[in-house]
Image 1 (spheres, protein in one colour):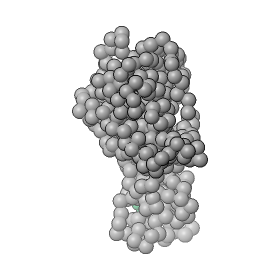
Image 2 (cartoon, protein in one colour):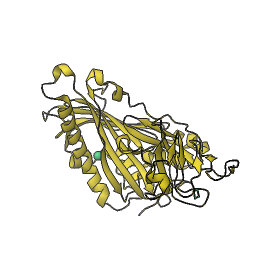
Image 3 (cartoon, rainbow, N blue to C red):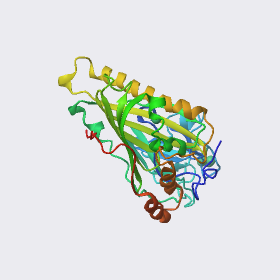
Image 4 (cartoon, rainbow, N blue to C red):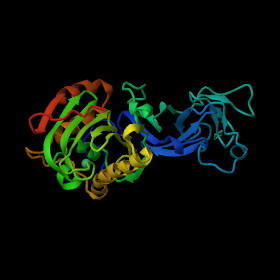
Length: 360
Ligand code: FES
Ligand SMILES: [Fe+2]
């Protein structure tokens, strides 16, 4: 298992940014145990439905807040009260800020030091997202809007989540894909490459690619135009113009250092006027084709050994720059600017100019 230190990414073992932690339909109302960033965590929803994420172990005597089925507090459904969560051991209650706000057998005294660590959480586009920051600071990046989620009236069919589970792989090897022009043909069946570039812009990294594609277009001579971008270290989105316009998500979150959980999802635009079949069925089939294409990458990742230094040839995309860009999230905020300045700009790997603009 290759760690962040093995890749010489920077001062931290885990990156700063927004990360997917699960499919919103599968999280809550019962408190649930999660494990990310090498930490045991507990996810719960307040009575309002608002999601919260806290460290799993109680500051009183170390009980696990999420792993309990037998305590009467749990059996009597008294673990979540309002927006607070109670420990199943002695019933200490913690508010959404993590502060202990009630102890059943101590009506007049709650210690100030009794505090659970909490993490910023947002529910958006059917997904629960958390902010992780090794320096413990508030977000300095916005969670992407995933605007197509709210465009059902324009024919967008919302995604369902494909969970690829955990891989013994450092996430840097997933991010490498942004520069990976050479795998498009052999892995994905791209034909007639037309254009491939990358744009590095602060905490955003873009890839633009035009080519024919064997599975995501109906005619072999049809061009698949792809705009793919990372906002932060772990959220990849792509706008694809193939048989249908679609909006892809690939999200990956460190579980432990060198182990990552991976998800895929796809929203597809099928305007009601053009649909002869059930649009949801068509969208699901199209999502499956995209999921199958992504599974081609995942099979490589699941079986490869770590690559600390890609043997980059002139025809390859800019792996080195991608890795420098990615290292900004493993270093203090104060260093991010200098790292970005080393890579900001455009690198054209193939072609002269784009023939298509993948605007949705
Ligand atoms: S260990 Fe949690 S209340 Fe005592
Ligand atoms: Fe790929």
